[in-house]
Amino acid sequence: MEQHALSRLTELLKEDSESKSEVNLLSAELMYLVQMAVDKTGNKKLSNAVAIGSVAYTVATVAKGFYKVYKKSKAPQYFTIKITEADQVFETVENWVMDALPEECQRSVFAHSTTIRGNDTPRRVRRRRFSGLPQSDSVPETEDGKRDRVAISYSFDGTIVQNLTIAGHEVEVYTVVPEKAASTSEGGRRSAWDSRAINIVCKSIEARNAVLDEIENQSQHLVDSQPRMYVSTRWGDWRRGSEIQPRSKSSVVLKEGQMNRILTHLNTFLDNKEAYRLADIPFRTGIMLYGEPGSGKSSTALAIANELKMNVYIVTLSSLTSDEALNDCFAQIPANSIIILEDIDVTAAVRERDADGDIQGVTMSGMLNVLDGFQSPPGVITIMTTNRLDVLDEAIKRPGRVDLMEELNYLDDFQLRGLCEYFMGLVPKDLPTVDPSHEISSADVMGVIRKHLPDFHNAEEDMVKFVENKILTKLEEQGKVENFTEV
Image (tube, rainbow, N blue to C red; front, side, top):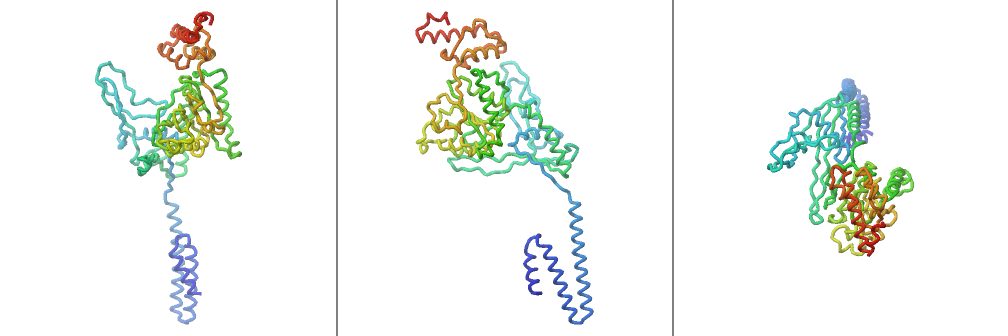
C-alpha cells in the first residue's frame, strides 16, 4: 500500500497543476500511514513529533491555498479589444484613439508625401482617411508657373504603448504589425503581409464594455459613408483605393425597368441568406453585364455598389500571375462585398477551355473555382462585364455562376432623354428621336455634357447637333440621307 502511494505521488509530481488535488490527498494518506507505523513502535516522542508534523503540513497546505485565492482576487484582470485593419471600423478607431493623444505623445508617426504646386507650404496636419473628414493633402490653390514641391503630412502608427482615458476608463493602446516572411516561390510571388491591429487593453469588464460601446458610437458614420474600392495587384493581394464617388442609380439610365430588375434580383438574393443555408447552397450570386464599349457597364456596377452600400473589389484578370494569385484575391475578400471582373473577354482563361496548360496566368479551371464560390466568403456578389459575350466559354455563363444576364447596349430614346433630364435638367426641345441602330452610347452623351462643366444646361444646343450628326452618319451609311428630315 505504502509503495503504491509513493509511486503514484512521484508520477503526479511530474505532471501539471491539474493533478495537485490528487497529490494533496495522497500526501495526507502517506502522512497517516507514517503515523500509524510510528504508533506501532510504541515510541511516544516519535509519535508526537509525527503528529505535530502532520498538523503543521495540513495547516501550511490550507494557508497556501488561502494565499493563492487572496492573491488571485487582488490581481488585476485585463481584457483586450483587438481591431484588425481588415475590419471597416479600423480607420475610425485609429483616428479616434490617436486624436486623444497629445501631440507630444505622438512619438512614432508615418510620414506621407504629396506633390503641390507653387511655393506655399501647407499646414502639417495628421492625415485622416475616412469619409467626412478633410484630407491633409488639400492645399490652397496657387498661381501657375511656380515650382512644384513636396509636402509632408503624417499619421500616427501607434507602435508605442500609450495610456489613455477612453469612455471614462484608463486603458492602454498600441498597434501591432505581425511579421511574416516573404515567399520567393511561384516565380517570385510574394506573400501578403499580415494586417495591422489596434489593441486596447482594459483593466475591468466594465471598462471593456464601455470602450466597445464607445467604438460602436464612433463608428455610426459608416452607415452613411460611401463604399470603398479596392484593386487587385498581380500577386494576389489588394491595393486600397479611395471611397467610391457617390452616384445615384438614377444617374445610370438603363433601358426602361432594367435597373429595377437588376436591383430586385440582388436584394432578393441578400434577403434569403437563411434559405441558401438550409438548401446547402453557397451564398453567392453572379451577374453578367454585356454590350458595346461605352454603354455604361462599369458605371452600372458602381451605381449598384452605392445603392447596396457594399465595398467593391476590382479584379484585373489579365494582370494576375497564376490561379494561386486569383485564389488569394478571393480568399481575402470579406463577406458582403461586390467583386467586379471587368472586360473578361480579353482574358484567354474565359475563352480557351483546353489551353489551361499553355496559359501563363489565370486558367479556365482557376476561374471556375472562384466563380463556384469555393474561395469566396458568403454574401459576395460577382459582377462580370464584357464587350463580347459570344467569345466566352459556356461554362463561364452557366447558371449558378451567372444568375442574371443583362445587355447594356446603345441608347434608345428613353435613355437619351433620361440622361439629358438628369444631367442637364431638361430635354432639348428639338432633340431627335433615336434608337440603338443609331449607335449612340452613354459615353458619347456624357462627352458632350462634360464640355459644359459646370453649367450642364448650356449643353442643349450641342446635344441636338451631336445627335443629328450621329443619325445623319448612320443614314449615309445606309444610303437614306434623303429621309433624314422625316426622322
